[in-house]
Amino acid sequence: MIKLLADAAIPFDSSAFVGGAVGGGLIAFLMGMLVFVVIIGVALWIYMSLAFVAIARRNKQKSPNLAWIPIVGPALIASKAAKMHWWPILLLIGFWIPVLGGILGLAFAVFFVIWMWKTFEAVKRPGWWAIFQIIPVLNIVWLVFIGIAAWSK
Image (cartoon, rainbow, N blue to C red):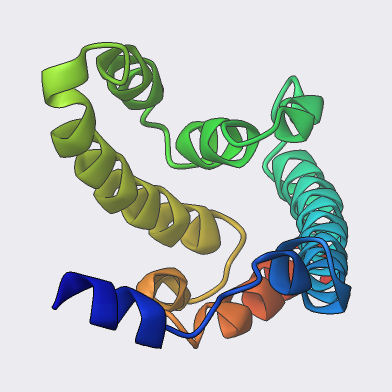
């Protein structure tokens, strides 16, 4: 019975998918998407850094160029504008402790909303604009609000 099933099986040629046109097209598509994501990420980093440098200058901070530090730069500028200096250090130290990392990651997100609320108020903008950063589709609006807070008069 097993021999009959083996004889009836359709032969599968994996080279048509892995080394053929389908595999090459899939790899090219994935590499194109990777390049696109990297370009968008770098563009967002530059935009956010420029915006937070402008916000830091409006708040008369001593070192506005901290905004250029990837990932933590905007949080440092926002925490200084919110006058909550020790929270970013405490939360970033907690990321090195494996068990507390997830809990502190959530706490960091909550405090970043609080920092942004106070940052918007420090540059004379409505604090509720900070809520848009946690809404998945509307966080694009938050990027616009960051630009308004940084460069409008």
